[in-house]
Length: 530
Image (cartoon, rainbow, N blue to C red):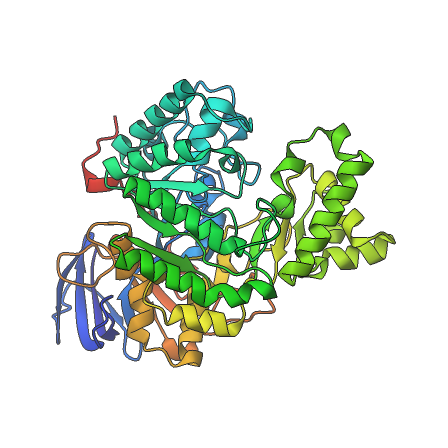
């Protein structure tokens, strides 16, 4: 199929001002850009009054865990309808590949947050998905997944022999075409890894010129993995990331820079200062963000690791319960966050009455203390419940980070079969566009962050810019009609008109065109699928 996009205002992905020209697409490629291109024998789309941008690139996704489902389209369509043509997956230490197929711990891949039927090599994962994708996928290999392959969720330090086994899996994934790896230092089993294990992983990434994304050990002034007093824990978490980077030399991408709780908001400028100081010292570090003041997490995210390690019987002992209550009470006070900021997304199929309510509201209904209700919800969900946690940002912080040169954009969201949806699944990138208008940010700056800046950050070849010879991933939108209904998180946003993936029209006015043109992009594009 050959296409001509006529009379659109082209934002090419760089920071250059837009130009009003036509684009000629043939097969997968942007063949020509210019004025009054001949459309004879080609499918023409009139883009008058519309913006034409490179396809948006989601810098942080977990959709690798949903691509093999029979109804995978349901999980991917909301992202396409945002204009997202490429997603970087395998984040927060979780990847749906990178495990020994014979591991006895295969069922534990995903840390309890995600599930996959038959995890194995990246090579096999990519082969199974040929011809089945609607978007492009850029894979990272999860440290948590490789550790799970060796030791499951066991909290003990790995032996050197086990670390060597883990690194063999990392070698395999990188040779199969992964672009880098990821840490999930707040999640099991990544939280249990000692520094020598983390540095060994980072050294492997550096060996293959890969990038490492990091969910840090703390996203707030106070986190339960640290002593309660001293330097803000969010800053200690960044210090740990920078230490690993300095000892390995690896490129680091700090995942979803957030500031959970009001007391954490004072850490914005010190954190940004630390990023820039590391860069001035010659280290390559940056971060990504989303446009919402809340985010999705697991119900157990505020529980300390010592408590998670206890047996069921030990958790009920009065001393352990009192110690936990005391630590959480002090932590909430220090954070400036309450159980009223924790909105339940899903506990289990037998508990729909809790969805969309805060822990505090449920406690009142059940005539319990909020602390007791919270632990009951954790138990009812067998530790697998989901929630939306508020006070991640405020509007001033979002504006500050959007204007910062080190930020790029992401969703960190996924479509849920049950429970309340995360608005990021449906609305994140159009919301960035809406905030671009509200904050008076030049549109070319925002599009750059959504496209070329992200492609360059992850070394994705031949994407992220509208230029002759580039892959034809393109998003066409009506900037004046971009609108988000924040009260309806699963509502498809207005304003996204056309989406092309690898030269094929995928979305026309929010409607899927029954075309599967996406691919697993493997690093350097030299890896054969055997």
